[in-house]
Length: 356
View 1 (cartoon, rainbow, N blue to C red):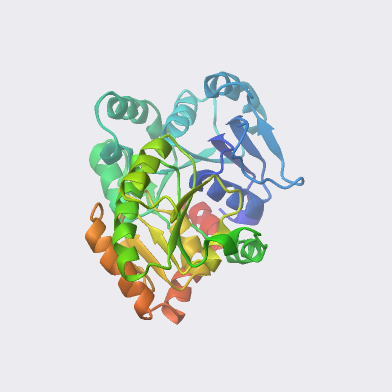
View 2 (tube, rainbow, N blue to C red):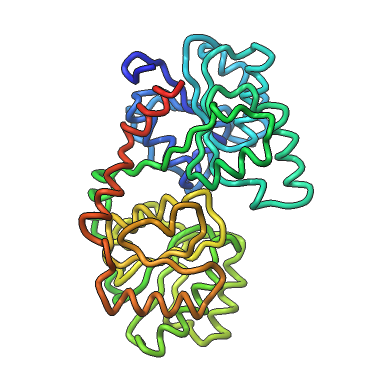
C-alpha cells in the first residue's frame, strides 16, 4: 500500500500535547489526512495549523466522544486506512471492525507497555479491552523490540506477523525551527540543566532532584529547570524545600514550545522510570550535545551520543551528569545524526503502510 494512493484518517483520545498525540499530528500532516479527536481539551493542547482538517467528537468528555465516534466514522467505514493510538481507543475501534461496522484497514499504535506499567484493576481492564478489540486490528505498531515482546507475551492470541516494530519519527526541521524562537526568560536560569515531562511518578523527577543536589556540590553555578505540570507538583516542591534547593530548581509548568529550553541548556536529562519510548529524548538529542537518560525503555542503552544510567538511582544519575558536563560524549556527532535521520516521519508512515 503506497502513501500517495491511500486515504488516511488519524484518531486519538484528545488533543492534549503529549508525545503520542504529537506523533499522530506529525504523521497526519505528512499524509495530508484528517484527524479526529474524541475530546477537545481546554489547555495544554497541540498547536494545530489552520489548514489541518480536524474534527472533535466532544468538548465535554471522552466518554461522550466514544458514544459519538461511530456516527463520525460513517464516511470512513470503507476504503480508508485508520491509524489510532491509546489502548482503549485502539480496542474500541478494533471491536467496531470485528462486528463489521468498520471495514477500513486499522493500524493501532502502542503508546506504552500497559501490562508492565500498571497493576490491579487497571491492568485487568486493559487485558479485557485487548481481548475484546485487538483482533480487529490489521497491524499493531510497537515502538521497541521490548514493547513488542511484552505485547505478545500478554496477548498470545494476536498473530506475530501483524506486529511491527517501528521507532518513533522526529521532524528535525520543525524542531530546529521551533528552537530558534527566543524565550525572554531563558537567561534568568542560565546556566541550567533541563528536563521535561508530566509531573507524575513515572517521570522520575524525585530521582532527578536528588541527583541534582549532588551535582551542585561540584557545579554550584548550575540550576535545574523542569518543564511540565501534573499531580506530583506539591510533592516535588516539598522535596525541593527539604534539600534546600528552592533558589536553584524551577518547576516551570507546562510550556507549549520547550525546544529553546533544550537548546540553551548546559545539558538535558531524561529521568523516567518507565516509558514506551520518550519522544522528548529525541528532541533533546537533536538540539543539545549533552544528554543523559535513564534506561527507561527498550533500545535506549544502544543509542549513540548519549550517556545512560539505571533508573531510580540518584547517585549514579548525578555521577553520569557530571561526567557528561566534563567531556564530549562518544558518538555525539555523526553517529547520533545517523540514528536520528533514520526516524524520518515520511519513512515512518510509508513503511507501516507498505507492511499492510
